[in-house]
Length: 225
Image (cartoon, rainbow, N blue to C red; front, side, top):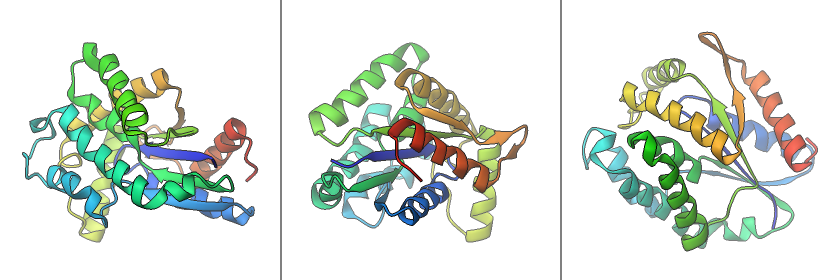
């Protein structure tokens, strides 16, 4: 099997942009790369995710409990894996990069729960997806740490610039703040490579963040970029 890298972060943290940049840098150095982005909105596998994020089950994220919502996202990963990118992950010459993965449930769904239930949820989540469903386990998770205040500002700017409608996570400032706390906890507990992408009230440049990601990939996986 090739290497599997996941990049995650709060909404607006730049994970999509940084996934694209990492793909380009790896390809420039001669690597074969497959880039995935979850949820896979273009696929029927994400139907339950769309229902949830679109507010059909309630306009507040907590209207749907963490276990149910996690199952929606897990189904998208399982179906797309079996029907699409399994061949890429099994190719020892291919590096697979995912913008979001199981890690996103450890951020956005964990945040709905009381702190004393966090460890039990993470144990369930990892066992459910990686053992019971059998989706691949990442070799490296890079978490782009962006403060919730900056995240909310960037999401609002993107929405006004592009007309992209905010989902129920992006509309809820409290959810993003709770998710930030959950992400820091999860990254420490699960050994993610956390990259601080802001200084004070300002985000770092794309170039600075990209260089830190490249260093993490090289140091943790031995991949030359």
